[in-house]
Length: 347
Figure 1 (cartoon, rainbow, N blue to C red):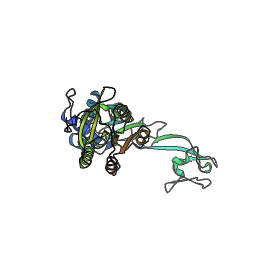
Figure 2: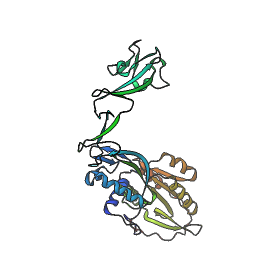
Figure 3: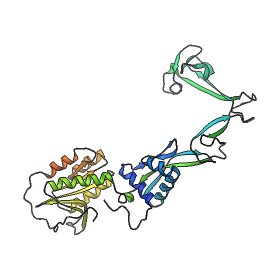
Figure 4: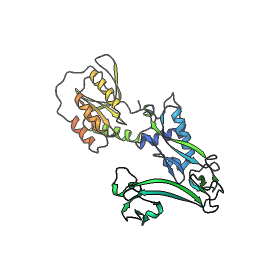
């Protein structure tokens, strides 16, 4: 929980929107995909429609340079060198006369009976049937698998091409790309070929955007604590047995009872490890981690150390929190943690 922008890190309004949209939608790793209008990124589709895919990619690169995103290899794409469209289709052409009127001949062998012929000869109603022994082979890609039914197995012998215009025969055609946007034709020599990485939010981005899920969860937690008569403090600073000041997202106190809560947006195990260190230093009735990601492993990891992990994706987690803080109060020695004052969420 923090402010929308760090004083030490200046973001443009559009950069803030990128981070905010990803965090609010719970998308930690945004991946590229091809859409009718170009390249889009998961969770940023509306922004791509508003300002264009190229501008969004520039924003993602800028945020990576600022350490808020981590870039990873994912995909690549051909772009039109004339209009930069990604809507490209490819065709084979004759390397001798450049005609697009070429045919592909692929020879396959039915291993069971040894018949060799053009792949087109095997096709009947979208399934392969051996012209010699009449065995129904089935789907092509299933038949070429080595672990499939031996009676239906085939082997690719080779392939070649022929040109209907000039009669030439060749093993490798020339590949021509055509842009659906501007109708330009070009080869790989002229094509723009760019990497399309995926981007993952780093820990540095955690406090930079208003997180809708985090805000809603915090409000719900505060409401139930106040209803049960607790005084709530945000970003609480408590001095532990080690004389070191420990911080917690939420501290709640009623009489001698003290509950300490942390909220994990991504279900990172490091959040649990950090909370364990604080728990060992501070005496509290209960230390609770609210995991908004629903990571199933955190609950089992926290249990041996006496940390309650509540699954924030489970609609009943607020009820479980209510039950937890409603247990009968026991007499306990007064803790020397100072007087609580209620702070705002933005303190």
